[in-house]
Length: 307
Image (spheres, rainbow, N blue to C red):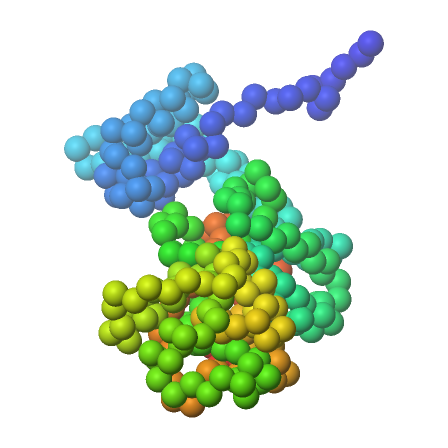
């Protein structure tokens, strides 16, 4: 069997070391290069030494005035800079290619079912070449492992290494069906203590928080139903089973269709920042993710929310 050099894997040093070499060559200073790369000057020296050892050639000359390229270093810089630009262009094309591609969204179940699903067809019509994959759960996902572009999470925004865009103007209201309200005239917060209340485990603000917010303490109230999903609580309220404390974001469609109404005439709601668009920094640069963020921002604004 014959073989040629073109069929063999050519030697390739560490791309990290090459990037460091290019940064040192551009700045002419180890300390400035280290600052730009967010590593120590010692790490920069170590990576340059590793690259020179791999090549068996000196690339840099060091002096009290800084560092300069050797003749070999100048030739090598020209070649690897061009190669990295080609790699960068190829990577950008893959990241931003939306043709026959999927936008993979993971969402908290209630947001996915109650808010996102009724609107997804509008996004699909705006981007017909983009396929959409939507999964819903409260499981903790890993973006690379689970192949997710963007995650719509419910909870406290405690993800310091990720891009987090919080949905604003979300508020918690007591809601009930029209039929229930007609049978149960409510005037004050205290009046609710004699009513059938539906509790949801998933909300960041629950009945206890809401009653305390309105300075009603030390009450003893049993709930007729307890659900672990907001969409279940909302459905129970639509059936006239009692009063829920829910998000105006999630209850919006039921309010628009007049399946539910606020229990009180006055605004006795509590503000909450419960839903967030979360993604890696690399995902934020993808054309398909940018398109989705632009679209969902417009949809939220039209509904009275902000992102």
